[in-house]
Image (cartoon, rainbow, N blue to C red; front, top):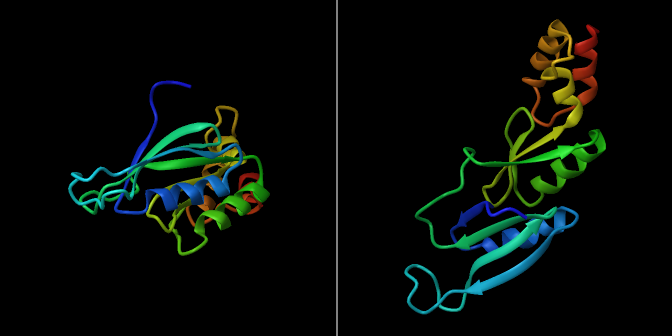
Length: 161
């Protein structure tokens, strides 16, 4: 693993969020939980404080450190999906318990973290140097109307149907 990894700030539920994420993605686990010392401002002594975990092998760290900072869509994780079935699976799993659909494959989970759930085929049809420019433009227009990416209508638009 490299030396760079994301560090996510939660008000008070970093451990709950990490447990949720590792339940959604394969090859994921909680690595370590550090508990808050007595003199940490805004954090209860002994509460889960810093959580280290892996998402599909990617190291992630999260902190429960009070409401002074909030997650927002300026940071998101991308879920690279092989097909529509994977898109459907991860979309539904990440929305569970109160997430919000956004647009164009983006969603915000119940903890406030943003995700892009994207089928590889979308990139092939819209951004590949080998893609037909007119087909790519039509495919992109359809994608822009979607919340969850549905690849079949995008493929049809690409073909001009």
